[in-house]
Length: 488
Ligand SMILES: [Zn+2]
Image (cartoon, protein in one colour):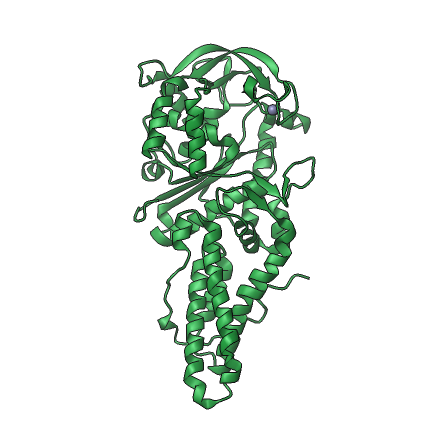
């Protein structure tokens, strides 16, 4: 990532309203939040834009609404609120929450469709053309599914035989862009991280198993969506509608925010939507003559070693975690478990132990000990003009190594706790001759604590501020109640 840039644009995918917020959504949103808070502290509040939102169109949404006896709009109004609530509970600092059913988005999508309809591919063909789609369609996935993706003739995700479907659709001529997308990936114009995912996308392109994709569906098969501007029989299909949220939110093409923030500096996504973001999305952007974003992909989650699934009943709502641990500890427990981009096992069973070890006995104890000793031995007086905001873990955060950033901070916490154990200031203080040594030791520890608190800002802004307030008060006092209460 570029160091001295003046803006930073971060997105999560828009989450599909057919689902409730779960820990997978929470993870993506938390890493985006940490990065947003970090860059705000580096380049200023106004120069960071953090977007999240909900994907609200499609046949499955219409079905789900009908089941509940609701109009689709009423249904999506309700579900998008559950996402907003979850992010409020987790204290997520997004700048804008986009909904694909909002007027601004719909208007700009129509504009984008018109532009694509008029555009020519690099080979001089029409970008958008009309054709018959003969395909196998999985209602569960809400998409055509390739023969090669079936297991025993069934969709592996839904264990259901797909239907044969032929319908008139409008298509995006992806074939004419594949070479350019490939070149963009190889040259680094389109960033895909980690490397394994980049290679996966290149492999997909080399296999030539990427047919042109539909940008519309008949109103019969997708009744809930944006009308296609030039064909009354069709609704806009998911790709252009959903993917374009990253630019409609900024007010493409003339909006001030669009001009300032596009291309995105970090688009976070999960593996299951890699192809759409790493192939379809850059092709659409090329057709619109727009620069390409940086894509950061995390793996699938397992919970305590098991696949997350509704049938196993192990889907955890982020709200449950926040209720038990509070928002900042929940974020810590999730981010400290595995490195970004790797296979990700969230060991919820270990959360209580990890909480007690790292937060109660680690950070909380250090704050307690240092402030208590400063209060007792130095009458609360430390010259905090000498404190330096030398953060640790910054390089790691810039490189999306969130777990490693936390490890670096916790190494300092551990070092300081050991320093106290070894120096035993409570013994030193008994002899007046050691007065300077005790003072020096407590100055160093307080100064470290200040660094620790500042380094924690992107992860735990409130706890970090609490520590800074204690350290920069006229007289340092031990907190009245512990920073992290021991779990019972
Ligand atoms: Zn399926």
